[in-house]
Image (tube, rainbow, N blue to C red; front, top):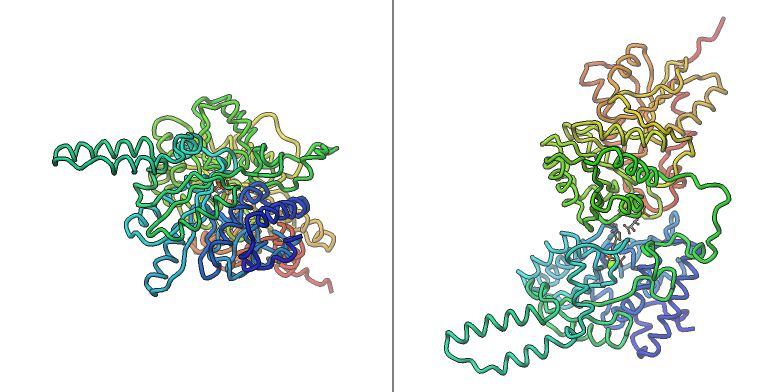
Length: 628
Ligand SMILES: Cc1ncc(C[n+]2csc(CCOP(=O)(O)OP(=O)(O)O)c2C)c(N)n1
Ligand SMILES: CC(=O)[C@@H](O)[C@H](O)COP(=O)(O)O
Ligand SMILES: [Mg+2]
């Protein structure tokens, strides 16, 4: 067993190829054993075992800087940098993060989780090195999916301009979370598969150099031929035109070829791109073949495949996907757009049914939003399906391209609220705060999966931008109405009238918490009003006015940043209408980034609990007059 003696990159520096291959198999076994218990990004990590070994053999982390893109494939990097004993706590509360984090290790150069940031960060490190006149290697490891992200091209454009020494390792496995899409993916496939590309570059350059330089005219003509030959024959020309020296494609599971390539990259001046071809899920058949090789929550289930005895409670995403099918059947103007998350967003069945009305644009949230705007300008009803956290990438496009033009775009915001194990980079904490300030935009959230389908239907009846936010995971298991109905915009739903002059104003799944708190309070003689707020914008002004006039004290509960959230909006409403003296206690996410863990643990850690709602409702409820 070699792995037990590997606790830092130094421990593999003297390994030969055979020993590294043996270690690779032990690491694969380690991943399978550990991830079948903890879950995590299984396929991506199985695919980079040899690549990560080669990187840590050739480069000297942390003196040399290894920067991971998206970072979900950095488990092997963590195993080699002294954290293998922490894997039983992977993605657990207060345990090992699923992504590189500078606070976790000196070998983690950049906190990641959102795609396509690695080359920009690497340029930063390279320029810092140059400014300090230091000597080290900077390596960005980016996947073919992440390479479809615009930021990657912004960074390559800059690198090509400054020409600093930088190595980009492109890990090409033809997969994003789902199969990769786009012209970039097709381009890479061509390079990958065309055998004659293998040594074309060397041969071409050898032949071209042999041609004697003749008179000016002929030379110019030859130059043009050389260029067109290069375009035809030399792989990676796209990257060469960005100023990179392209090397590849290289078998990403052949350690000796990888070592050779990394050594060559190390000794090449200027920007270098090493194109490595791997198989996602390598070494675990089910992960190699399955769509969901992006991340298995528990690979063991694949083998046992034990169906659950009780039909599972549908997830919000699956209800979204099923509702999209229903709506699209009724209205041929409807199309669905996803930036690279078809399966996660519940759109696979929809895509099968309506292939011409489904657009997976790759990791390109900005393009996805403005694409929706363009479609809406010309009579189409686009539904932009996007995770709350990734929507942060498209904020300007939502303002500038969708809302200023007041276009009928529906934004289906999935993963709104805490997502749990993915941690700080993925919590859907901020969308209420950054969306509700935008004029023309309607923002609503259902209390359960049944109300989600009605809200989606309602959104598509509007002629203006409408966002529906809903959480990750299962709904409440409530019955689903057959007939979809329109919910009056800006109208909340009073679930319990109550009699105690205190109201709990809850948003989305927080309604469930509010009702549990009301049950506890009623045992103690306090009968709060419980409201399913439904809308963050526009608020139910009539209800809020009525509560103020009747002297109600208010508790707001939202699984979103308190700063700028629904509670803030209500306070602004009262202030803006010069209504003073309304006591309101906002319960929401605190002013810090929320780490990884289960949603239940995280809610408790931030005080979004039944107990805290009870505590503050009791504090605010008017005291009963003691009878003499
Ligand atoms: C901005 C952004 N959009 C979407 C995602 C979701 N996401 C995580 S990994 C991934 C696919 C990355 O594919 P690739 O870079 O090829 O890595 P692989 O999983 O194939 O190793 C996506 C779309 C993200 N992390 N960030
Ligand atoms: C790494 C990444 O960004 C995605 O794989 C993300 O982890 C998916 O999240 P869900 O599991 O909520 O679909
Ligand atoms: Mg990939």
